[in-house]
Image (cartoon, rainbow, N blue to C red; front, side, top):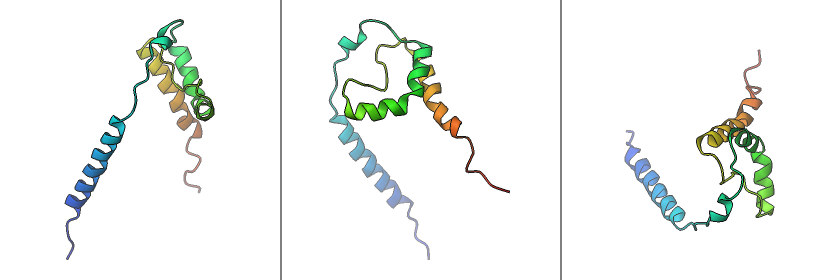
Length: 101
């Protein structure tokens, strides 16, 4: 006879989610007022920053002055460009691992 494991899985998921929320709530908040001065970045800069995200991530691991995302941006258009640019890495991969006939 099969037992219903749904309640056990639901409780496990809830425990992991609560633990994740507790750990994230301890994260520090960085002041960004100094970053909000100067040029604001728009759609094209967001697109470029999205394309170079993998490189920025690796360099950012070793250099604290390099960030992936520009805090001083124009809002939605920068976000849209960043999303398109960073999502392009998945589109560039294509379906190369597809079925071979």
